Structure formats: structure tokens, C-alpha cells
Length: 75
Image (cartoon, rainbow, N blue to C red; front, top):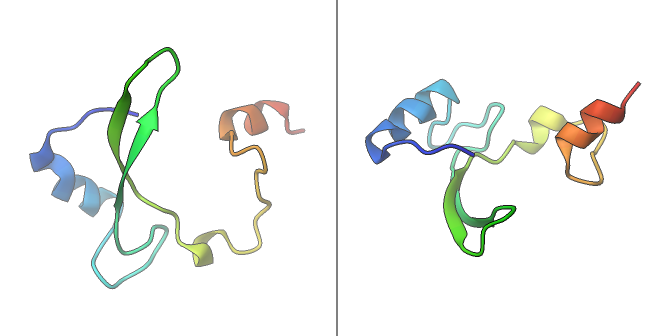
């Protein structure tokens, strides 16, 4: 998680290739969600780029949802 200025969101859209009506690696829209971070009592509003189903078709699912742990334990 990192903070960017609102004015940079269109730049991030361009980097992530998120365009209305077109799906690539990410869905054609982004989401706002509240995230609770470790050690914090409050929640943080985050902008999320959901991965498109077609981009991960056939790949194994990380059941824990923790990619860092998964990466560290895979052989």
C-alpha cells in the first residue's frame, strides 16, 4: 500500500493499462475499499485494481490470499 496524489490516478491507470470497457491484466474499472492495516486501529481508503479472470485462468489459486507467504514457501 502506498499513497499517491489524486492527480496521479490517471497516470496509474495508464501504467496499469486500465481503460473503460477494456480488460487486460486488470478489469476495466478500479474499486475503492477500506483496508485495516496491521497495528492500526483505523481503516484506510484504498484504490484497488482487480485482476481480470482471463488474466489468471489456469493459474493456481493462493488459498491463504498471502502472496508473500506463498512465494517464500514454494519450491
